[in-house]
Each structure stands twice: as structure tokens, then as C-alpha cells.
Length: 237
Length: 237
DNA sequence: GTGCAGATAATTGTATACGATTTGACTTTA
DNA sequence: TAAAGTCAAATCGTATACAATTATCTGCAC
Image (tube, rainbow over all chains, first blue to last red; front, side, top):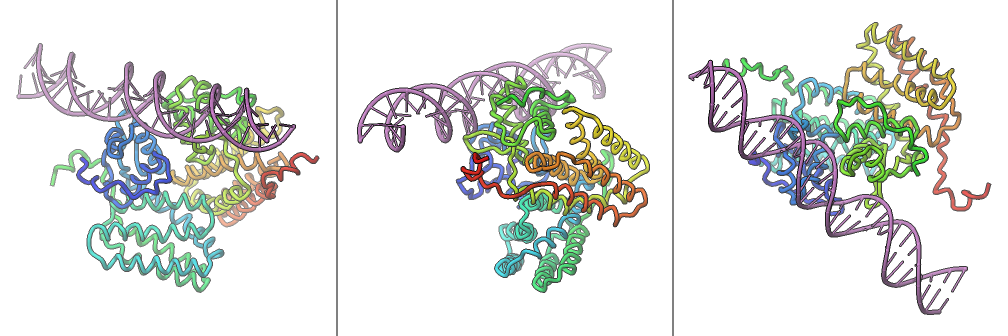
């Protein structure tokens, strides 16, 4: 069960208090796909893994359930969320709904320094793509999300930023479940295009590129209803 | 301290489990302004008020802090959130950002039955406006928010619906703090206008009306920085 | 009377304990 | 043998206990 939950224990800022530290470590593990959808996260196991009591483990799991990354079933336990195809569609619908607005907001406030920072992020992302190894893959996933989060941060609206953090994290789960071509490579180029449009203050183009970008990510998903695996279909092959 | 926390204990669906029930009751009390911003919510007090242990009270308060309705300060306790003017602006900026999109989504899916339901909600809202008494006032506040939540519900996106619930609840706090004319009366007419536009499938008009509506609510706020009340200005009256 | 220092009270942070629910295995019986 | 019933293990739900932190009060020096 914990074959995949080995190298957890994220660096941690050590300035946070117990439950938050665990929550952040678990979230990172989920977003970077070291923990797969459906994995059971029992309170005892989480607690002993981090050397804390069930109390704190439970608090962390509750927190993650508010973010949609963990689903807790009454009297049964917590599991890494396993978003349904419909849920996946809603997540991307939400992104299509808010990201153009965030981008517009960001475009109006962005400073040259921030633009430079975005470019750096893009370069780093490209570098990771060319590297090999699981660790690089994880970092790439994270970097790809960070681009969108950076835009939210630039928009200056903390509420939208937090919402985007949730959406990006949940998107990562969806891609882990339904993604086909493991290459989010095309995404990189699109990020570049958006930055270029931003540099030109061409907001409309930037928004359109963003919508296309989200559509591309979604197009790479296979969201056919494998409804509970039919109970029969699961064996007739 | 609890002079304003008397008639709590909301009806409750009795199908929920402990902490959620308390969370919902507290949220309702906050949104309906029976609990004012800044009110201290100590774990013991909340627990004994609902006849549960601190454990559950704490869980409920944590949950509310994720929604932004309660702020918990380390080692000091939980308080009904006291949004800063800047936070208030961000809340409304977020609403301007997402509500047109939600409205568009809703317009595409709305059924005649749902339109009728919206109309009914509007009538109920109007009825409450004409009534007198605190209880009617509370119900009016709730009904006014319910209009926006209903639209989110019609949009069919659970994620956006939950986000709107958070935004509407936090807006209620902001209005309680910074609202000037206690009359959100003008809002009623604007709700009606939006419904009418929806009936005509005139999405653009509906979105514009929505933006104006949000702007009007925000315009009724006095968001000047009363920075810590100056320590002198607070008493020279 | 003002300011500092230590003690005391109140409140949160975390761990542990116990009861309730679910799950899977084992036993019994037709 | 298959179905049903019963029991034991694991896990969650909640309460309580204790430790750590913060706020408040008291007393003393100045």
C-alpha cells in the first residue's frame, strides 16, 4: 500500500504548525503524482509516517478534502481523490471560466520584473522537459502548474490565487488519471506564446491562447465513462 | 461576549455528522449577521454551546477558516473574520471575474422550470423586503445571496457553485462591516432585470446587468482605510 | 503613580483513550 | 458446497487529558 509513498517528507519551511506541514507535504506528493488517485490514506498511517498523532493527521486530511484532493468517506477513511470524468470536465470548465479573467487582470498589473520572472520560469520548464528521470518529470509537472499560478499571483487577487491553486492541483490529479500522451510538451510552447502576447500587451490574444491551451490539455484526456467498470465489462475481454 | 450569540442552533438536517452541523450553524449565523465580524469564537465556548467536545468545535472552526469566514490566530483563538478593505475589494473583484461566466453558463442550460424557480425566489425576496423585523431582515440577506447561488447551481458546475458560496458568504461579512445604506433594496430590481434578460436569452445584457449589479453593491460600501482607528480618531467624536 | 517581574489564569496545541462502525474471515447449517 | 450468520480486526468518531503558549493580574521597586 505504501510502496509508492516512500520519499515523502517534503523539505518543509519549519515555520508552519503541525497539521499544515503535513497537509503541504501530502499535497505536494499528490500533485507530483507520488501518490496515485485512490490510494488509501488512513489516519494512523499518515500519523506514524510523520511522527504525529492521529489528531494532526486527521486535520491535514480534512484540509485536503476541502481542497478536493482527498475524499473522506464516513467511517471508512480517506483516499487520494479519484475525480470522475464529470468532475474532470467541471474542473476544466472552471479553468476556462476564470483563467482568461485572471490573465486580463494580470496583464493590467504586470511589471517588467514579473515578465522576466515568467520567462525564467518558462526556461526552467524547458530545461526540465529535456531531462530524464522521474524526479525531473515531477519537477516538470510542478513547473507547468506554476506558470498558471504565477499569473494568478501577478493578478494580485489572493482569493483567485487560492482558487487557482486548488484548480491546478486537481487538474494534476485528472491528468494522472485520464491523460493519454504523457507529453504535456505542447503546453510549453503555448506558455511561451502567452508570455509573448503579454509582453506586447495584447490581452485579447493572450486570452485566446490561454483558452486554446486549456482546451489542448483537456483534449489530451480520455474522459469516456468507465462507469464503475460495469462489474461485468471489467472481465469480458 | 455571547450577547449576540443567543438564538443560534440552526434547524440542522440531522443527517450530517457532528462537525459539519456545527460548521453550518456557525456559517449561517455569520452570514445572517447574528455574529459580528471580530467576535471571538473560543473552542470551549463553541463546544459547550453545541454540547460537544472541543475536538468537534475546533474542526468546525478550522473548516470555516478555509472558507474565509473565520480567522484563527495561532495560540490565540478563532474570530469571526474581519475582512480588510483590500480583502473586500478582492472579494468583489473575484465576483466580477466569475459571475458573468457563471451567468453565461447558466443561461445556456437553464430550463423553464428553473426560470420559474428564479422568479419565485425574486418574489419571496420582495416580500421579505416589505416586512419588518430583524428576522425578516436576516431572511432578506439570505434570499439576496440565494439568487446568485441559484444561478451558480443552474450553471451545473459544482466547483463554481462552491466557490460562489464562499464569495457570497464573505460578501455578507463585507457588507456587514462596510455597508452604508442598509437598503440592498436596489439589488432586488437588478435581480429582476437579470432574470428578464435570461428569459429573453439575451446573455450579453444579462452579463452587463450582473456587472452593474455587483458594482452597485460595491459602490454602497465605504472602503476607506480606517487604519487601526488612529488611536485618537477613535475617541474624538 | 509608573514600569517591570513573576505568578496565575485562560486558551490553544497535541496526544491518548474509548466507543462505534465497517470489513473480512470463519463457522455453522441446510 | 453454498449461503447465512457470527466473530474479530481494523479504522474512524468523539471525548478527555496533559503540555505549551499567551494574556492578565499582583506586588515590588523606583
